[in-house]
Structure formats: structure tokens, C-alpha cells
Image (cartoon, rainbow, N blue to C red; front, side, top):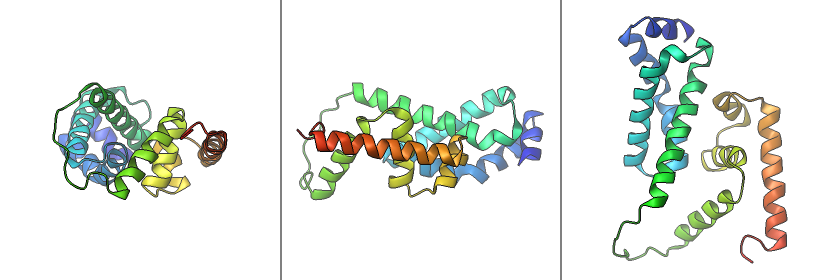
Length: 169
């Protein structure tokens, strides 16, 4: 992969396209974990590809291309979520909107929102996307021990909040 990054940095658009093809599935998984909507996921990935292409020369270590790209994607997803939070579209309630799975999704989002972002990300990737600790560590460019620590701290924080009645109390 480092060879392709070097070629892409020197202006080889075919090498850049190959890098993107190699990482599309990873980008999709991460974006879906955040956005849960194919149209938004496609927008986030497209924006990420554009930013990566424009900023490729700023990548310091070629071996970190994938994690650099995923970090840009995560930032794009967070920006889209912030933007969506400010927009209140008017729409009629669809029948069946209060199905059990909808409540579970809302509850999961509420639980995650109570955590710091660094804990939200690992919990989301671990539980929602079923990524392994090793995969999360590689994706976020942190050690596996850091991932395990963040998962543990997030669980402890959630347990304390739940037992203290802060989430639903």
C-alpha cells in the first residue's frame, strides 16, 4: 500500500483510485456506524475521497494512509451529524415508527451521547459494527490496550450512570 501512496502523491490518479477501491468497504462500515443512512454514507465517503485527494501531500507517513483517511471520514460523519442536529425537517409520522427496534436505536444513541467522543467511537465500532479490538486499534491508530481501556472505561461510566439513574432517571 505504501507504494501506491507514493505513486498517488506523485500525481498518479490510477494509484489513488486503487487505494480508494482497497479501502471502500472499511469506509462504508465506519460511515454506516455513524450515519445509518445509505445516502448520507455515500455523501460522507465522497467528501472524504475529495479531501484525501486534495490533502494527500500533507500525509506524513505513507504507511498510515488508511487510518488518516478513516480519521477524515469520521470527522466528516461527525460534521454531518452536527449539521443534521440543527435541521428539523417537517415530515409526517410513518406508521410503525414506534416499533421496538426504533426504541432500541434511540436508547443506544442516548447512551452513546452520554460518553466522551473517544469512548463513543470505540463503543460504536465494537458493538454496532462488530469490529475486533485489533481492527479498531488499526483504524484509529491507537494501541489495542488503549481500545480495551476505552471500552472498559465506557462500560464503567455507563454502569455508574445506569445504576445512579442518570440515563433514564
